[in-house]
Length: 220
Image (cartoon, rainbow, N blue to C red; front, top):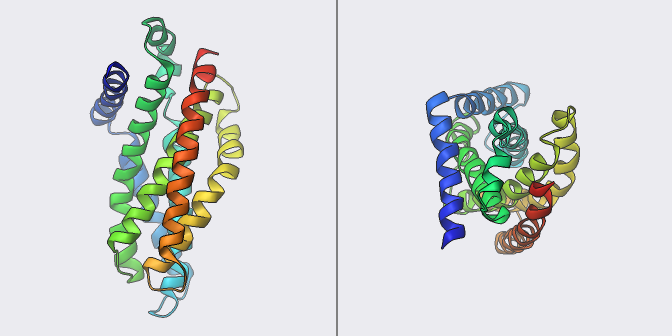
């Protein structure tokens, strides 16, 4: 219970800080809408091609939005040197990491709340419960990996370059399985249930691995 309480406190602190500053989420919302508008004008979209094009545009916007969101996950701790103070309280590293990952994931979910309706409006595709489930499941795994690597490169000068180099290769399973699930949810051929099971398996694997690695990353 103590671990859960600490994690929720860290998440609440990040969300309150974002609510007061309103820097990240509005910028991400504008970014994804602009990306969809550019894609809408860049491709010849009709009722037949939309289910094939929309999933790629969706994941492209989501990946770049995630890189921005997770790149800022430890920005306050880096600028204020507050992470060491939090660790000195005796709080478990796994709890701190879980709180940071949950906060970043919720900000990305807010971005997705703008992304999915805009996708439906501009591409004329139907947003189903299966599509939302696939995106949310991919968000979990991408969040824990993104925050782990963000913590690793937080103190480096080239962190903006290193974060994509580290995160993108390990995001590929979520993009592939998530893309298959989204395509199937939009009516294209594919096994939706199998893709969803893969996303769940990847989530469990990477949540466990990142939780175990968090102690070594944050302590260093």
